[in-house]
Length: 235
Image (cartoon, rainbow, N blue to C red; front, top):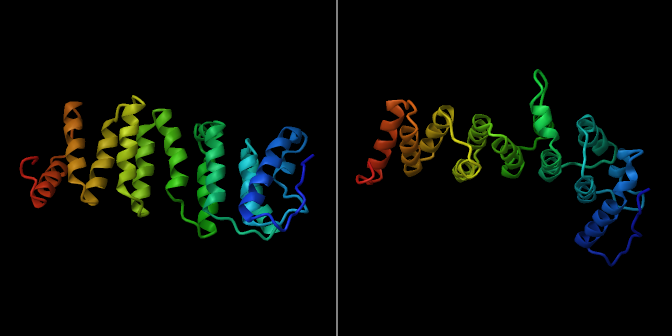
């Protein structure tokens, strides 16, 4: 049974949310008979997007078969419009519990993340860096470098900063995930399109050091870019 918090007019929105989250967290262990109860806002609690997100955060395990209900049906019943935070919470939870990894391994099925992506798009919400990062982190941890790079490419197409690509490329090195040839083929045009030819040169050097075949046209684009920026010494 969920312990509710008596409404207090003197409470601010943030303090009310913190108390709500603490209350639900403490009672989460008693929800084994009905995990749906964990995500049902108490009647005395004002049913807002903030309180709904707090409940999502408090529930550690979110089964895949309940995603559509809690992100689709329940908000409609409660007249709540979800935001990017709502979806990001669920993506993070799936990654933390390992559920996303198991779903990604099943062929001919949409992954949990892809379902979330579609739900977000159907509600007019574009995934941002916070949404992509947990999935990319999981892929990198499992040494699925090419898939991580494709997500980075998608981020760039959506207008996210190229610095995210650079950060995750270096994260792969820290995880001892050796970039494969596909990584360079996908990442090099991406950074060149953003005008980051210094990083492009770094990629070319590493690809050559690993004896990967690199398209001469792509290498030439890096050289031309460096020359245009008056970096003749590097070129």
